[in-house]
Image (tube, rainbow, N blue to C red; front, side, top):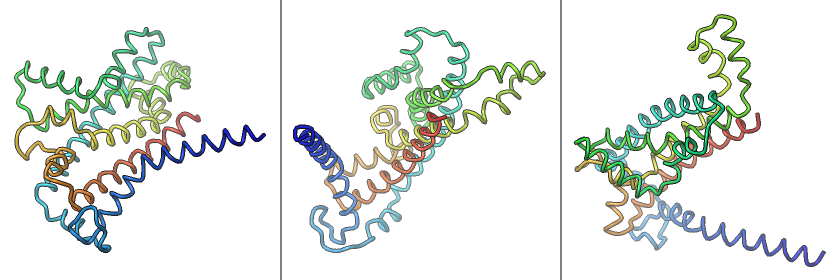
Length: 263
């Protein structure tokens, strides 16, 4: 018993150290975003002035709008294509490792490799870089994540009800709208929230596929350009807002996904 308790205590100690290493810096960042003074590392009182300062910063507001546009549009497209891809693959029911590799390649390939590949592709097609190329790049990146979430629900889907709907004379579109979609909808929403979170946070692919100037600068790119000149409480406040949005969307996605897996 003593040896078992010592082992459990050691594992819990390691767990606490790991979580402390991961989350104490984040907690410090959030706390210092409310710092009244201009020094980012010295606490001098509670204040919300840095959040108010963000509201008057034209560059940050423009980057936030660009990020919202990219995230919403790319999420909508990736959700549609990813859902259709998941349904198509699972309806086929017979697929090899090669197809699996192609579907999940964007999740496995390092971001820098995917970013260079997409930039080369856009250059080869003589595309002018801008928000539209960032959106296309994020669709490629997010599609695999949406597909994997929806496929997790489809693994337990009873395809006989689709066949029954067809036997009763329903068209393919009606069957999808009234039979398939209501069953997989929680997974579709979870995949969309995950895609939105990834799109909001993504920097490397956006950096490589964005055009010049503020018109195609996203929020992560704006933060990077600001932090090159030093950390300020304003950056802490901006990072806190981005993190709060990401955590909220990711939490909702996990809750929906947990319900999907449990069904």
